[in-house]
Length: 417
Image (cartoon, rainbow, N blue to C red):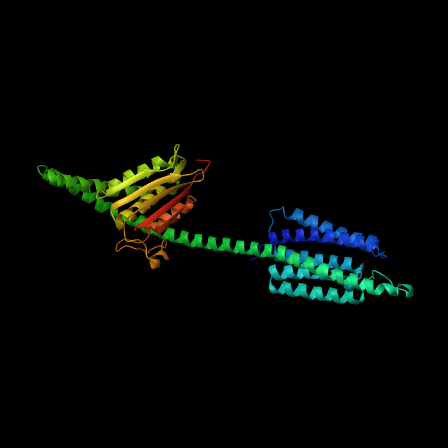
């Protein structure tokens, strides 16, 4: 679907240039060629064209959408006013007769086939009428025959000038219209992708809600059994340590299920602003509790104080946890985490020592239900990318030159934070 509002705005610019050119042409015909013109009729036609341009420009400031029939009527009115001016200035003998092609070119670039054919027929009819019905610029008599060749040369020069102006108009304005339509098409494609993504998220949310409801009972049973085992084997310190670890992991699972069942309104209400260093430290602390087998994890802060403030939500923390868990699943030893920032954005880098990403896997990263591991559901990176996109950030994965995978998370620093 063409953006007729933007096309109509471009049409007002073309009319402004045409009015200026026609005004100069009239002055040249009056004082250069000493032509006997009906200045009042020509001026009235140019005035109507100027008024149409002003009304169109004012109409564009209204909230009403510009429909295809309205845009067609604008082109039709423009062709009629062009014909009225050309009728008073030589008709088809005027080298600027090719101005009639501009509405046709615009129609071909923006309107549907039926309207384009209507514009084409109208242009042909107007041109045909102007071949025989017009007011000549110069009326020749016997003593003016010596000026024929000079006027012919002037006519050829006028045709060249008109051709040059037509090329400039087509190159500049028509290309701008085409780029505007392409940009609108890209926006429609992006909106379509977002709707598909929202549908996928809704399906995942429905599945997650059902899973959370079903997992609550076995987790409660596990917690009760672990407490009984702790009482029965109180004299075994090694077993007590393992049972405490299992109890701790069970509580973490229960807390995550409770957070999963929170509504979106509760999450937005609980969001707060905090320094990015505190956010990453809190996520790393929670991650170390979830992954007690981690070893040789190095965390470094590169940015200079003070750290920028970010809006922190539960979903954002979970996204960072998903990326850290992916790095730990690749290789739990030798994980490097670094944090840097500028005035515009924050950059979190996670480097693991895993096997890296193959070319085939890189084509499907971020798609739902696609996993590069032997286990997992393949939704972690998809949810992470979606959440970061809602925070105006993004995530990218690369093969590190020293081996493994480098995960980069970029989050913008917002002034309202």
